[in-house]
Image (cartoon, rainbow, N blue to C red; front, side, top):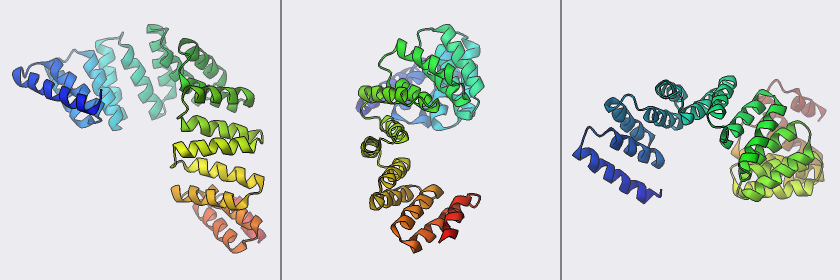
Length: 305
């Protein structure tokens, strides 16, 4: 729904509640509308009221869990998903959403267990294979990750993030041709994905196709001008090509976006040193060392001057 449609829906649900304050469904539906507007506090308040009126509605518990999730309260999200599953052990969405919450807390094993349950209940759920594939990737089980992402793509060939993330797994397996093919397919399906352009650029940089890498970093930056990593990596590509001025310009931007990035200072220092600007190089090496005292590379480089 568009914002004006959501506002109208909220007005109508509010009228329904005024006519019947015991209408749990009206509170639940208004909560969903507030959720879709991004007003998670009001959504939770409405779900609270709906649950007070109908404590056995599993879907409302699950919806309240999702609102807590988007508000950033993962523990309360999981509590609500647990309640939903207790009330309805067949509620696929509760397992799926709880798996995502567990994943975000770092409990990847429990996330996989929940995605297993989703797949057992709905073997045609492409998103469940996608999510489990990402979890296996996080655990370092690359073969299982690819198997699940393969299945996600087989079930939904238009699922662009699955191609992108399968590309990441192939990249980690040093299967760069396969990674590039997957990133390109992800971009064909979703040309506005800054992440896929960034990942494709990294893959091209890894095989020293630096012009193609830079072209894709350009695209990534155009789509997401706040991505410090894209500027940093493009700076590295320009440095490798010997274009020190452009490399320094990109490191400047990376540092402006992330002033705590010691690597950006170190690499800019190296570019300055290579260009013969030793004072600037020493200053950058010093800043890199101050940010990461345990990193001896910048200290060693500074000592060479």
